Length: 155
Image (cartoon, rainbow, N blue to C red):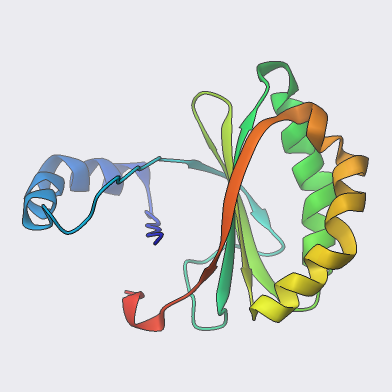
């Protein structure tokens, strides 16, 4: 299971952490195990202006990338100049974002109308784009998932 939270600003996030987090955490004790969290700062959009609205998407693809320190700027540049245009031109791709965390970590979220539409993009382009963007030289590790969105969990 994945839970994504989008904050309007760092000030709102900091306020939540200072005022409400511990109470919420205590109320949820025992309802999960092996929880990991990571805070990423927004860096740029994938396709169009990102909105945390999910009514027009059924699938979210998340890629968590750890990038070699000397390749960070190249990786970000290739995301913007190679990967983003390819995703943006794919039928069924709705929108997404590219975020960065300390320690040369990045997240790429892309929202898709369906798993079938994401599958078409993946089958046609990923290997070719990876070679063009020199992804193997940039990325130390990548983990990810294709998440079917559950509308009843969207608030």
